Length: 244
Length: 81
Image 1 (cartoon, one colour):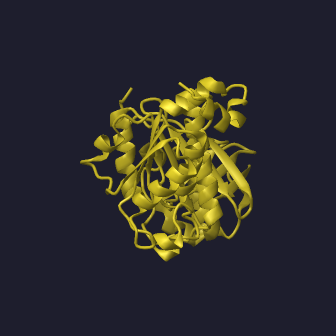
Image 2 (image 1 turned 120 degrees about the horizontal axis):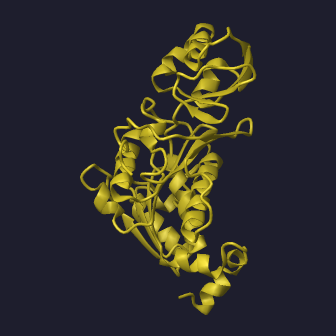
Image 3 (image 1 turned 90 degrees about the horizontal axis):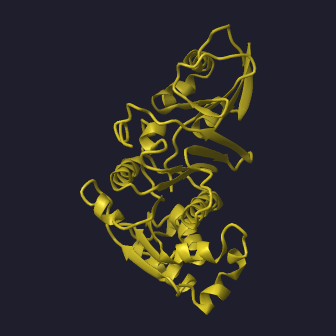
């Protein structure tokens, strides 16, 4: 049930015709897991918190470093050496004290992924490596929880919405990962991709059309070029093949 | 036939261009097109294991035969966050 304070706080988005108080109430009741409190997680977390997602869980096993601060806007100079999950929880709770935020300092593994996603309506992939992304992808398929994928490199990135059993999963799209290395990233580009992820989560939970479901968006900020690609499931996919 | 190609991320860096049009023989498939590109831009070979393609804004599996005027995108997965 929305309170008078909720009606005021979220009035500018409640006024969106196909969103309304009904959409806001759905956000309030929802639980979203954000995997990664880095550049993508900072942007996605900020806009999911401001939008009024009732329960946010943010997971990261890392600590804040000075070199994170060009893009990881949930952390400040005085958060250096602090656990990112705690720093993100603190900041998100200040951004919106009307929601519940939980920070979990844990590495996502094959053993704990399903447990960490339990009860979530959506999981946001804000990770920084494909090894853990594939684990999260498999966890989302096993749990039947939609995965909102995002990733960035230098001045570009990609995003997709994966509905388990219905649309291509991360392994269908990218069967082979790129080599792992330290990647240059412009903060604003991570912000753009993270914001697209948050927008798609809000649309999905509020019952609006999720336009990125079954599609892959490529974004090149250097030349302001976009490509929207329609995806198809791979029947032989080792992660989602045969799952309905 | 002429095909329009767009490059993203590491593939854009490998060819040094965001896009180009190339002339291909009739009945060339999209993997054949990639072979032609790798011949011209050897840096693309290093990315071969994780190169992803789309044809006319639809994900491509590599076997699609190309037609005059087709649009192809060539890109890798990116992994930063």
